[in-house]
Length: 184
Image (cartoon, rainbow, N blue to C red; front, top):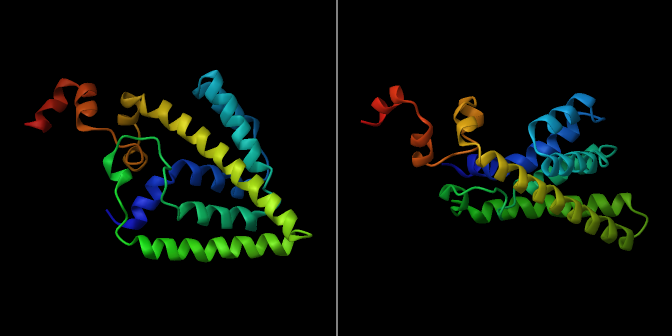
């Protein structure tokens, strides 16, 4: 698997959350209703809070885009999954680190140019990181819940299903008998 694919898979939830905010200027009632219907009370309330938090930055789409790039190039713990490939070291970590440094520098210069002082930029940056950590925590909660629904994962479209890889043992558990011929 290439580093580009691995970066997308490792940052799927956070990337989806931030990207959604860059595409829409408000939170639709349909979205909140869907979240409430799909997830239990704790996860749904945290998800709605997460959506509101990310949408609080929509007045500055450039900031969101820079944040999306920086986050997408990070290689820490970004997914709640047991898939060993998620934890695998990237093939060219120096290139990824170098690219991330460029965008972190751009983000910092952008903040300096939009804040009245360096102190305000530092405070804003701290808030941004704190908010991003909350988003990541909510993504962990959501992914943990989705990972517990192995049967539902098997019913997803193949591209989306590949974002939630399940072990072969889990897949075997939920296959019907007609699928058993594939294993022989």
